[in-house]
Structure formats: C-alpha cells, structure tokens
Image (cartoon, rainbow, N blue to C red; front, side, top):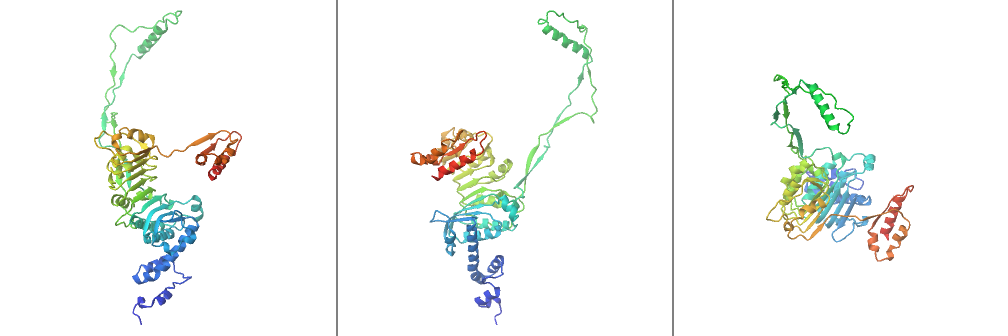
Length: 476
C-alpha cells in the first residue's frame, strides 16, 4: 500500500480530487493544489489553462479584452482563441475591467507569463456608473491579483505597459507625501505705532473750509469770502502723545511667513508587489494607483532600474508639491521619448529633469499645464542635443525655440493636435454637398472634415442633424 498520497497513480489522484467535468472544486483551490508540488502542477496545469481560456473567450465575447498577435493587425475573434495562444508572440493586449476583476486578471497573468513575447499591454481600470450601480463594488481581492499582474508585466522583457483609471473601491489611500503648513520659527516683531492726538481739531477743520473757499471763489464771485476764524499767530499748543502702555498690553505685531514641510507617507508597502528584475521598455501612467503611498517605493524602483525608453505621465492626481519631491529622484539613462499629459509640473522642476536626460529624442508637452516662467539659462552646451521632434503648446514652444543651438539635430516642431471645425449657420444644401462630395477630387478632405451646424432659434434638431451629416460623410 502506498505510504503517500503522491504515490498513487495519476488517474486515481484525479478521481480523488474530483477533478473532472462538473467538479465542485473552485479555480483557487485547483491552483493552490497545482502550486503545492511539481507532480500536481504537471497534472493540473493543462486543465487550469483550459479554464482560463474559456474565461478569455467570455471576455472577448463581451468586448472586455482584445488580443492581437504579432503577425496580425486585427484582434483575435472568438473562434481563433485556442490553446496555441499560450506561448505565442503577442503584439498587444487591451483589457477593460469587469466586476470579476480577480478572475480576469488571473487569466491575463497566465497569458502574459506564458507568451514568448508581448509588446504592449493596455489596462483600463475603470467601471461605468451603471456597472457600479447594478453589480456593486469591485471585490477587494482584485488589488492582490492586480499587483501580481503588475509584477509579471514589469519583468516581461520588451513589454510596454499602459494603465488608465482606477476603480473607486481601490481609492482612498493617500499619496506618497503629506504636507504640513506651519508657522516659521523666525518671526519679525514690529513696534507699535505711536498715536498722536491734536487738541485743536476745530482749528484744523476751519483751515480746510478756508482752503475750499479760496479755490472756488473765482467761480462764484457773488459770494463773499466767508468769515473764517483765523488761526492765532502765537505758537501752537504742543500736541500730547499718549502715554506708553504697559508691556502686558503693548500692541506688538508679529509678522511670520508660513512654510510648507513635506512628510514621507510611504512607510507601508504593498506586500504583493515583488519586483526583482524589471525589464519594461515603456510605461504610460494615467492612473493614481502607481503613486499611492503603498506603491510609490516600487514605482520609483521600476523607473530607476528598468531599461525604459518611453515614459508618459498623464492624469496621476499628483500636486505641484508632489512633483517637486518625485522628479529629482527619477533618472532613466535609456529614456528617448518623454510625454507629459494632464499634469501640473512647475517648469523649473521639469527643466532639471530634462537636463538629466540628454538622450531624449522626442518630447511631447502638448497637454501639459504651463506653470512658472519658461526660460532656459544661458549655456555653452546644448539643452537636448539628441532631440529630433518637439510637440508642445505655444507657451512652451516660443521660449524653448529661442536658441536653435540648444537642439542641433531638431527636425520636427509641432504645436500639438489641431482640429479644423467649420461653423454653418444654415444647413440648406449642406447634406447634398456632403453626400455628393465623393464625386469630387476633394473627397478625402471632406471625409476628414468635422462640420458643426449652429442651432438656429426655434430649431431643436440642429446639432443632431449636424452629427448625422458628419457620420454620413465619413461613411462615404
């Protein structure tokens, strides 16, 4: 008789575990058994992957995930998802969060970990108000599985990661720094202002009336000069100064300037984040999750140690003071493309960051808020010697391009995405012109044109009509 459970034949072990069609065992139980020893892993891994593949098909059916292979330029259809996808080369994976976030992310984890190559992974971690109302909050266990998915993405060589949004159930944790507004210990003490009181107030009033009549007497000649009592020729009575008050009641004025101190708020770390050898090639952060207090240490480690060539900061939820504390501690020697989205970064902080990265070849500042004076100090060395493309708003472009020697290899300058919009007051003949424009040589320009019909008084369907016209023109 076998002395151990593992000495039994494979068929008997599977029968004992009840692992067959219609088994009551949950996915978590099966995975824990597979991780307990090598033999159970070899027995159960094929069925685990089959269950995950079935779930991936459900996500594809519900348009929650898109998978594109390297040799293709379109997302895989439902019937194209088979076991061969594990171990193949994938071009991109796009995922939108669902209510069963833990199970979804576990399937993504297995797919990315077993793929031979993954170029791009895009995660949209947001739920609509409808889903939150009908399905309720996302289970808390999703954060643990998302941390595991982040680990496998970071350590996948050549992968570019993009994360957008953050579920409401994961919100509530503060940023990496706390700020305290305190009073400066060095205060300036201003002495009290002496109060002088003149006893002859009535005489002063008569002087004012006398000056008034002297000014306006040429305009009113019929009125004689009023008899105003003259001030006595003798010496003025001395003014009395109020006696000094006691030191207890002296109105001393304390002038102090408050200052802001930052306190680190990232002592607690996420126990599920275990990044050892980051190999990311690019990262796009449009979420607050990476700069939470429990994530900040790992995020800074990834940015400083991974061979990142593309970096993008978007809607991170960081304040002006946060960026002033974070940017000085980020240095990426391999950085070539840098993009700033909807983030408020003071230009002095941005300037020092760019100055530490002379390898940047593409700089995009089109959606960034310009804070502070944009000015480059005089220097004998170029500011960005490798920059070939610059995209930004006019607030950035005008000051940055004053000296062409700062960018010796610059080839392209763009003011950012611009949209052409024509406003039409009347819509008569517009529909016919758009629908028949396909016969004209300008059909390509018409298809890309966005038309807007101004809503006239008493007209309720002007905007809807314009939208239908634009849709019809694009379809042609």
